[in-house]
Length: 284
Image (cartoon, rainbow, N blue to C red; front, side, top):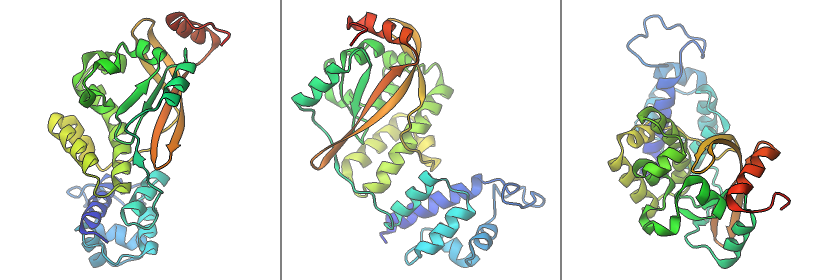
């Protein structure tokens, strides 16, 4: 196993151990006040491995660890399915087929985006670059992406630098910004695990860390996440506050991939309001 992967596994397990309350695992907090979360010996005992071996794993010396041991540690640390998948991906034991991130959009895709109006839709890649958006989405966020320098068309970078984008996402203060970043950073961490040695992704992450202490804190938290179809609140540039349900379509084109996010109103009145902005008939 590559040394970098061993190091990442150790950091991830340590963070999960420190964040797991002893009471949840059935231990008393008595005499543990100076130790955040569980002790190494607690985790080792629950996973059925020696404390010495577990300590080596946390120090980034996990070469030779078995699949069974990792799964036992995942259970001991109460990892959810996304976190377990992340751990096994780092260890190269469960690899999801990886395609290169889509970097360009063809005419057919642009035509499809246009047909989705008045439903706001945006196409992004694994780097969170914004590849294209339809008229409804640009009307909603108040930006024309083609007018931005190509290097600035990134979902994360816009959160850190663009006041129009921050207003659209309702990033009202630093606490909200960190909350927004935490989820996105969790998804980037999963991408990073599946794409070892990706220089473009590494450069993006380091750039964002340098730009934003909040991004750096989120990255150092070792949290992982995956894209979810949830309800999101936005400040529409024309309509004001609006709540939409996100639907995710994964697009594969040969050896590249992108993710199409389509946003649906919660009722017909919401659909009519969106249509009024783009001029698309409500019967479409």
